[in-house]
Every structure is written in structure tokens, then in C-alpha cells.
Image (tube, rainbow, N blue to C red; front, side, top):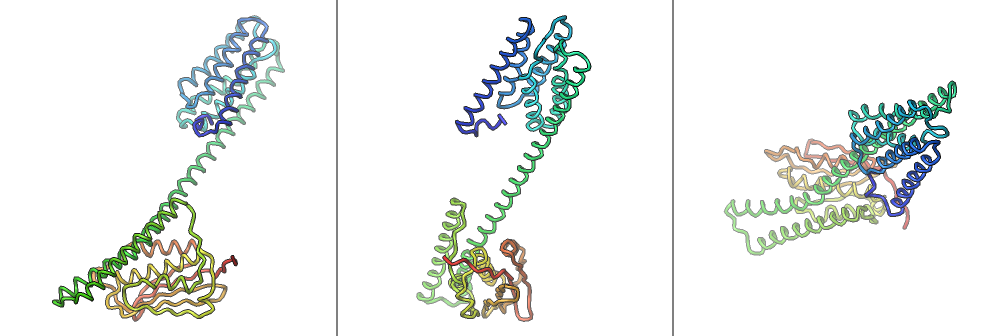
Length: 384
């Protein structure tokens, strides 16, 4: 509609301007073809008024009502004159009124539309009565056909309005999904490294609080670990910003074993052991499955640092299941820390990410610790 004029290209603007100019020219020609000068001037003015209102980028209810009243007033005048219009009753005016009625339904609030649409409908339906040459029963046929056409225009406007509403709702849902995705990415990219920083800083505090002054070498190693985790957090943030700016996912072309090694390689907590057979480790999977695997392992290790007290080791395993499924399991033998609520968004976002990849996620306590398991489709990547 014309409300979007600012977003049109120059070609579209030129085509729209040409169409409006053509309509105005035809309205003048209709007036010239009238039998008498006064009725010709009136017909041309009515057509030009509707075209001018149609050209408005933003509809104003008062102007729309006045324009419809101008058409109704001229219709009543033609009926009162002994010699009204003879060969046309305003084709351009009829089309412009129909377009305006559609715009009113689409662009204005319903409380305004219910007042303006009936007025415009009456103005359109009564236009054929301007011609004194059209007698009954032809006049009744003309009015009936015009009424049906106006009703179709109203239905078209309602359909387009509903279409715009559905599109707006879909756009809002897409934005909400995008916000959730960004929230998951922020958590996944940053929480793992920040948790490592916190864990190592706590180790320094606990060592000092216990009365054991760390040696310069041990202190340097701890601080180097904190520095390394901070650098990794910054690198992850830069990678995320790159993805957001490009609005395209970074393609992953790595075997499954390399992804597991990358997810576990920088862990600063208890020792991690990985169990995966050589054939599965060399398997290339589609990027969204590999991404889910990486985040399952990374988030599980982050939760070990946050919530697992006394954990002596972590076991990460990958195996194939029937029906072309892949299972990733992360176990630890620690117990929940006192005061650990576990009410963060990590597992929630992780479950959403796994479900988006076509899998399922389960997590919970075991007899000797905590277990996180993700079942994902074993979808092989196409050879490059």
C-alpha cells in the first residue's frame, strides 16, 4: 500500500506515480465527455478528489469521510437535476473508492473502519443512479452488480488484513526464536570459560585460606589458567559477534572425534576420559548435529565445575544406537554442591538446541554422580 512508499524502489515509485497521473487524466477526460459543463466539472472534481486521497501515504479518517461525502453529494445533485450524466457515472471514481475502501480495511483500526466502510460502500453503490439514461430495470441490475463488486472488495480487504496480521505474527515469532537462539549462544559461548575463571580463582582463595601459601610456580600456573580462560572467552565472544553480523552459521567440517577433543581439551576441572571407537571418531556428521554434540559436552563440563562437589573424574562417551542414532553421554562422580539451585538456563537452552537438531536430552542424578545423555540423529555429512 501507499503507506510503504518510503520503502519502494525508484522504479516502483515511478510506476505508482504514473498510475496515479493516468487515473487523474482519465478522471478529467470523463468530465469532458459529460453532456453539460456543470455536471462534467462535478464529475471531474469527484474523480480527482478520490485519486488525491488515494495518493496520500497515510490515511486520515476525516479526509476519507469528507471525500465519500463529496461523492454522495454529487450523486444526489445529479438525481435532482433534470439532465444529469448521460454516458458515464464515474468509472475512475468508482475504482478509486474501491481501492480506498480496501486500504481503510487494511490500514485503519477496526473502530474507524466500521464507520468509513459503510459510507464508502453507499457512495459506490449509488454511483449508477447519476445517469438519467439508465432506467429500470437496467438500473436495478447495475446497482446489484455494483453491490456485489463492493462486497467482494470488502472481502478482499479483510483477507489482506488477516494476511498482514499472520505475517506480523510470524515475524514476531521469528524474532522471539532469534532472541532465544542468541540467549543460548551467549550462555554457551561465555559461561563455559567464565566458569573456568571462577573455578581457578576459587582454587587460589581456598589454597590461601587453608594457610598454604602457593609456590610462585603454582601461583603462576593458576593465573596462567585464568588468563587462558579469559582469552578463550573473548575469542568466543568475537566468534559469536561474527556469526551475528554475518547472519550465517559457520560451517563445521570436522570428524566427531575432533569435536569431542575440542570440547574437552580446555577443561580445567577433574580429569576427563573420552570413550569412542575409531570408526565413529572418524565420522563426519552434518554441522547442526556436530554443533549440538559440542554444546552438550561443553555445557555438561561447565555444570561439573559449577555444581559437582568432590568429582574425581568425568567420562565422555559416544556410541551408535539402532535406527541411525548417536548417543552422547557425560558422567561425573561428584555430588551437588550445597546451595546449588540448578535453576539456570543452561540445561533449558541445551535441551532446545538438541531438539532443534532432531534429538532428545535427558539429565539427572545416578547412584554415583550425575549423568547427561543426548540422543541425536546420526546424519552423515556430504563429502566436500
